[in-house]
Amino acid sequence: MAFLASEHEGSVAALAALEARYGSVSPREADVLVVLGGDGFMLHILHEHADLALPVFGMRLGDVGFLMNRHAIEDLPERISAARTVELNPLHLQAGDRDGRRFSAVAINEVSLLRQTNQAAHLRILVNDRERVARLVADGALVATPAGSTAYNLSAHGPILPLGTEALVLTPISPFRPRRWQGAILPASVVVRFEILQPERRPVSVTADYDEFRDIAWVEVRQHDTIRHRLLFDPEHSLEERILNEQFLA
Image (tube, rainbow, N blue to C red; front, side):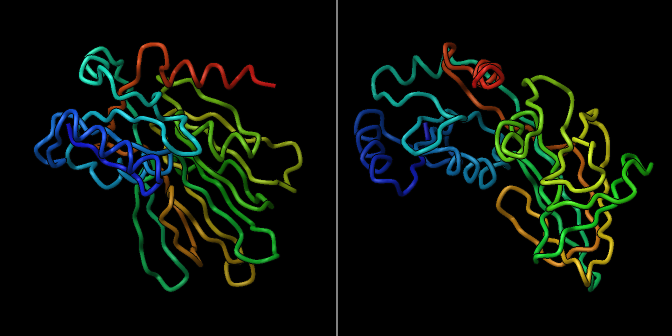
């Protein structure tokens, strides 16, 4: 086991206790990564160590722990052996700015486009090269994975997707026009393209989890075809069950 802890005081203390009890190896020598912290730190670890393709078992020691299990020192190897695996497919972002520079990034939760000034963003949306929204006037829009559908997408009033659904969700952020368009659920195989209308007057940024690019002219989002994350959950605290529960909360 390789233990990785956030800078949170509780995480640091838990790291010392776990290493004293079980020992620890480096991530490249490990069979499993054990992440101590909150969801933000979990996303950071998934991005940083994606090339290792190792299963990841998280324990909550931060403020938000949707992707984490309960924290306990006892019987950790047995918990990991009995854990249920949930596979997460991230998104691949490609974008270009007004000066012709190109960018790429990976998002586990969502890719979001946001206006940079007080001017509303004007976005043209194409799905598999077919225009679906000629002009969205809004604060922005996002594309979320099933795992990310309970994050920013949920606060933007988008639908929750159960894990295992081969779909993505496309959600407008504070839309003004078209008034009645609330977004769409799309097959996971699609390519979603955003074209920024009037980018000089109405500048827009794009964020893939925590990588941000500004003054963009266009964005393409698709499911990543080579990266797949494996998260481990205690059987009684599966991510799928948590996503199901979120749909019944008042």
